[in-house]
Image (tube, rainbow, N blue to C red; front, side, top):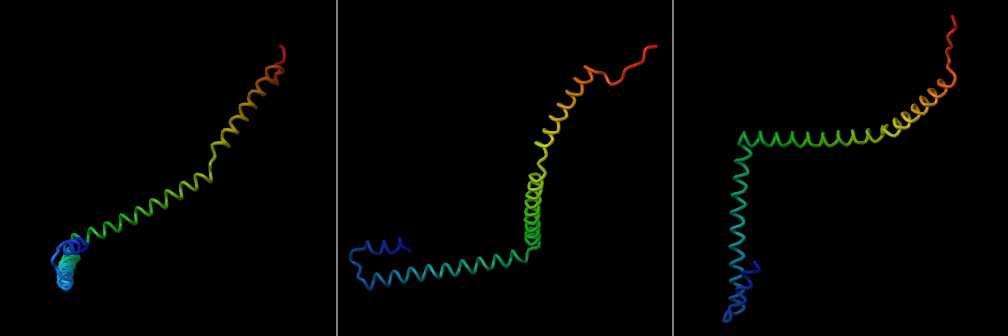
Length: 120
């Protein structure tokens, strides 16, 4: 639109009334063209709605969207539960304590054995 108005403004010998007539005529033509294109769009849209393959594709797209949202919700749930049961530091502490206890037990047993066998 603006380009048409600028082109009309560049004409030197055109009067204001004539300029307005040209702009209105061009705008009217654009509106008519838009109406035609919209009608064509609606016609194609109606044909597409009647097409079995297009309906099936729309249904499949709906299923895929549902599955995507389910996957996202489940992955979020798994991530949350994983954070709640973050057990690795606790397991490392337990392992360290077991090593300390085993080392201490080995040292005590080496110094004073628990079982002494009687001499025959």
